[in-house]
Length: 278
Ligand SMILES: Cc1cc2nc3c(=O)[nH]c(=O)nc-3n(C[C@H](O)[C@H](O)[C@H](O)COP(=O)(O)O)c2cc1C
Image 1 (cartoon, rainbow, N blue to C red):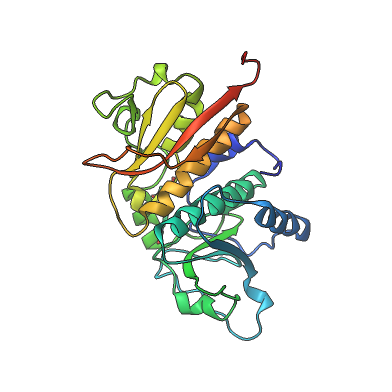
Image 2 (tube, rainbow, N blue to C red; image 1 turned 180 degrees about the horizontal axis):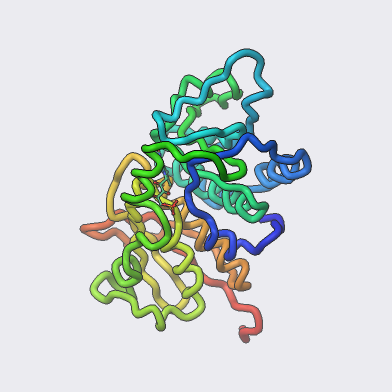
């Protein structure tokens, strides 16, 4: 991730869903930086997905943005397209959240929309790659103006940082039998903290994670329409935090990791920490 004005960890801490935007334009140099970030962001997963940055007023005639009453304002949008497979969702979640966090680091607000937008409003505004479809839309901009009734409602019900599952409900040591003690997470502690505060559809937080000394296995607790996108988001939080802490490694899908209750997605293997002896 390119360097924003604040660190990625700080940006992940600061990000919350914002559903009311002023019509203050985003400066051209900021838009250019976002375009660069979109171009540079790659996924370690095999799926196909793409991010398109659009400005409503660039289109002639009346362009509406139907958000079913969830969002007020909104001039700029990150439109996410991807293929129809779960891996495509995983990739979209991963690359899009990197760009969202970059936008946060530049002082912009945002909200992921999976359901609260009218797809046909956007279909003619972007070139949809062959085999892909519009999957999510994320208005970005400066927070301000009146919140809609729906926004106020959803923010009371399931948003905001304090509404997260306990650390011990999400993270486990060696197997699902042993909930993880926060103080035992070692070099993964900060990265797990970032997974916990990641956004997810309806704030479901479907991530379940088994941590062992040098590896971390990621599972989904449900198979909802947006679960694999939620997982991609969490994996990007995990990786951005580790990179900032100079812990490096790679994601691999391993054999024999299936669980009777949770769906296995991928594992992270740590290479070596800065200053650590080989
Ligand atoms: C894949 C995805 C889809 C979402 N779809 C919607 C949506 O359609 N409408 C909406 O108001 N919020 C939507 N959200 C935002 C979530 O409600 C929000 O991220 C969650 O409640 C946590 O709150 P926070 O983002 O403020 O931390 C979506 C989030 C994700 C990750």
